Length: 118
Image (cartoon, rainbow, N blue to C red; front, top):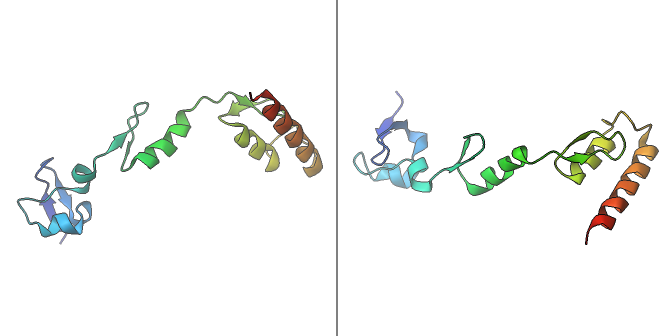
């Protein structure tokens, strides 16, 4: 049998894993579930919920503008220059012919990126 208990804050019945050992030990009438104790962090773009601020921060990269172009094929679908470089390094770029060519293109791209910084 699965042990459930009602959270005194949100009134939802949840299983044992939804309570910390300290909260569970408090007993039936004073336990709060982990969500109520720790709070939740919600994405304001897609309504996904995360247990900690760092997970939400990592998730927010999904919503970042994808306006960096590949230095070789010109595909404008990357959120950061590092992602465009990985695209070339991993051999996913249709404009690259071989590893040496990829390295040269990456070097030229990196030089251009650093020249644009103030």
